[in-house]
Amino acid sequence: MRRAEVADAVVRIIAREGLAAVTASAVAAEARRPAEWAVHQAAAEELLLRLTLTNTVDAVDRRIAAAWHEPGLLGTLAGQPTPDLAAHRPWLGLLVRSAAGPDLADPVRLRFGALHRELRTRPAEPVPGTETRAASALVDGLTAHVLIGACTPREAADTLAAHRHRC
Image (cartoon, rainbow, N blue to C red; front, side, top):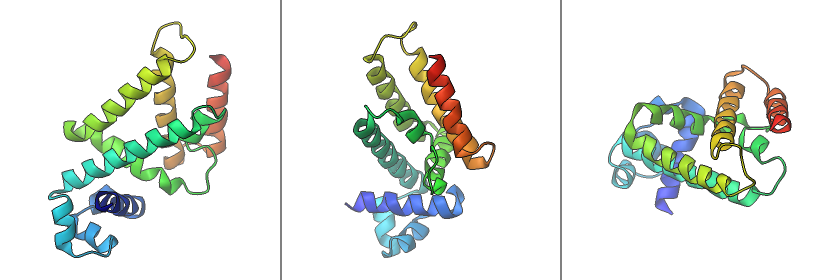
């Protein structure tokens, strides 16, 4: 439970203030715990972020597993009209940060690899893995576009629908 509490505090900080605001003392304050508590849970900022990223990846995996057969799965994952886009900001921030460091990239790589293997067991694709990688990249890209205001959630959903229609 404590690690989940740390991850939840980090996600709230990222959503509100960005990645740069994540420190052991900020996490302790957010979780209403003594500073030593956060240091004990994750001794360095990178460990706090890795713990949070791993927790976030696990939550995404559970969401995918629960919604696997729903027709709007890709739209759901891309932030199809949702009242709280701030919920997607921590994932995007952690994803971008993972591009800069192999320690954070490992959980993301493992998650995408497992997702691609799972999707390849579904109906056949012309080139195995190609459509799953394209869909994964499209979902992450559209989420980023919605978060920075380059498109609306409705436009992202329409783009996904058009992509699914072509495939």
